[in-house]
Image 1: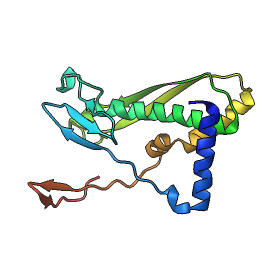
Image 2 (image 1 turned 90 degrees about the vertical axis):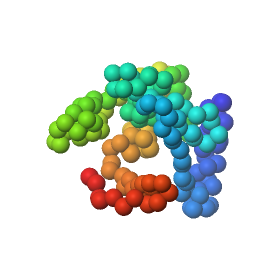
Image 3 (image 1 turned 135 degrees about the horizontal axis):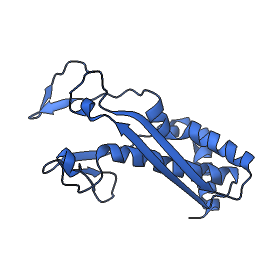
Length: 179
């Protein structure tokens, strides 16, 4: 897909939202199911199911990335996509964009060994490597826009309301509030 096609598509979407503000509200979905052992499958739209598992040292069979690795991949790929999108709209040529993402997790939180240790990442770091003929000034503007408007980065940086429910044998299970 050409940069010009991406630019036209995105500008058309922006024009559509300006004309119809309700079109800005979208919902993305994924459904998942636990299989044998720690292996899970995730179904998103009409794509083939994605395998998610744990490495052997965490009880899995290593048949796919684990959930926290999927979070890291989501951050890196979202950064890359937003670079492509804004680069196209801003007329900034990109030869390549690669993200290396690392997440630091303390397993004592996962295993409920220390209540003061959170179960999730304590720190996430990313390094984005870009090849472009654009000026450093243009790239600085692009970086600012991407780091301000990347949905996954924003989701990880700013608390977001997360709600859920559990049913047991087709009956709602009433739970006490958690964290």
